[in-house]
Length: 162
Image (tube, rainbow, N blue to C red; front, side, top):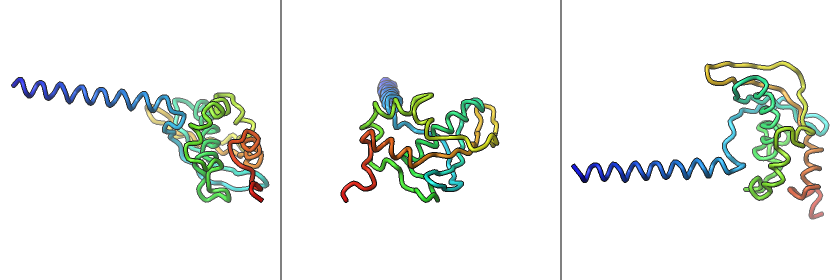
């Protein structure tokens, strides 16, 4: 009987320790999981228009989160079915490597807002008891964003090496 309770105690301690380690490592990472969906809507002269679905407690929060998620998508994931499908920052681990830059750039009210605009006020809202899924359509100024990242030495210019 003593052996079973000791075994149970050891398992409980291991599970508790491993959960705490995971939680702290994820919360300290700028590359933590982001929950959003993105759909390409169109391309223009130096721009990409996308529909972003974000999850939040209310519409206002979801709209702001949608703008941020659109920028994060073009920077780190790429946009499926777009002319510009690959991530603008292709370097693996770049978000961590340039953490101080991206923390400042992507902070609430940060410089990223300069490169994004809502294209209309039509929202697709899906409500549940805990959160809302809100879709917004935004236009990203990809050429200007690229110039910003080149000036900050995050990415190399397109003509680099010629």
